[in-house]
Length: 248
Ligand SMILES: [Zn+2]
Ligand SMILES: [Zn+2]
Ligand SMILES: [Zn+2]
Ligand SMILES: [Zn+2]
Ligand SMILES: [Zn+2]
Image (cartoon, rainbow, N blue to C red; front, side):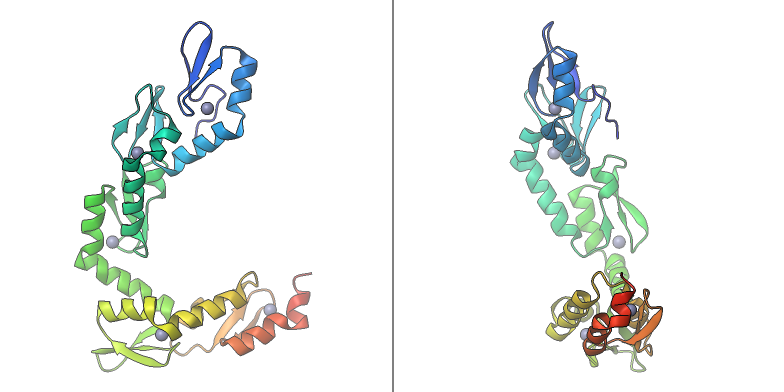
């Protein structure tokens, strides 16, 4: 991103300049401009732009989500506070929640597209397009396939069922029931909550345990050793002196 001193500062009159990001006038003296450009508010606004799809070309501000060119009266703050922009962002985040869709490049104005990580394709990032995409059967299947290995859900001989290793439970082999199990099943969600709290900051991997049906162990990268992947064993491992010594 451009961050030069005069980024966002445009001439206004003989005595004043205007910061189009902050929507304020500044006396036309290098010291005042410098002070403004290195101020917290100004920097915050530039940060906000890069997270909200607002870009500045040729001293003209443009909001990609709203497809809106700023007028003289607009500032980044006034635009972000407006209902249109906020509603758009809320709607987008609602749509992509849990869908493996990456909008970082779009919101940084580096691309006009969102990227679906599970379908491995770009989607023109309008609400309508994204909505269509997340509801498409091919996307639902891909999300479901993505969720299985990271949730210890495995095929069984009987094609109509799947087996969850964490809960030692059978679930219907349908997208809806997999999603429901992963998101709402108390035991399942509880397992993740407990284990993730235990291993946080301890450099212990559970990916292989989740991915491989017969794997019994988590792996401690600090101690370079296997630990049986349940709350009791992980708890005693992270509390053990030999493990704690690896951190000092
Ligand atoms: Zn400013
Ligand atoms: Zn906008
Ligand atoms: Zn997709
Ligand atoms: Zn489960
Ligand atoms: Zn360890």
